[in-house]
Amino acid sequence: MAGPYQRPPTAQQAVLAELRRMIRHGELPPGTQLTQEALAGRLGVSRVPVREALKILQGEGQVVHTPHSGYAVAKLDFDDLLEIKRLRDILEAEAVRRSMRRFTDGDETRMADALRRMADAGDDVGALNVAHREFHFCVFRPAGMPRLLRMLDQLWDSSEAYQSLRHADSHGREGSFEEHSQIFEAARARDASALVKLLNKHRQHTIEELRPVLRDHR
Image (cartoon, rainbow, N blue to C red; front, side, top):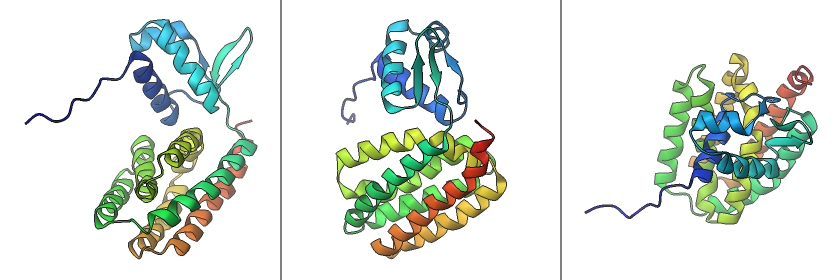
């Protein structure tokens, strides 16, 4: 029997997803000028879905618009990263406390698989970012709070470029993997309190490692 019908994405949705991917994976680095004509040609669409996608990304803070200059990928900024971190502290703690009451063996298996893919990614930052995000959302999804998950999705979209900086450094990758192993063990134990503390520590380490790096990106 055929599976349930899935409506194909609109041109705007497809363009938005691809632009997010390109920004997350560093194909469109911070500060890159974004012309609607060039993007439309690259993606094989008209300017209309590109324009609408750029407006959405501007609302999310991933791109900026300057009169007479147009759109550009937002530059990395330490204060921006700090604000994202503080918001994630609050929202992820709420998600974790609710999720651990619903966390299943299936969630644990998916989390373990994401951790293995992180280890196997090596210096492939794009693959590491994908596995890293899946690892964390294995913890958040069981909360059963779709509005909260949408907010976290947006915050993670906004922080992906910062995370790529940490993942691009071999020392940062090594320390990050050790932290994620501890996070996984806390999730296996369904220990919400320990998990919240470890996630807070993990985010703080990212802040500390990127503070000097971001000075070079000003």
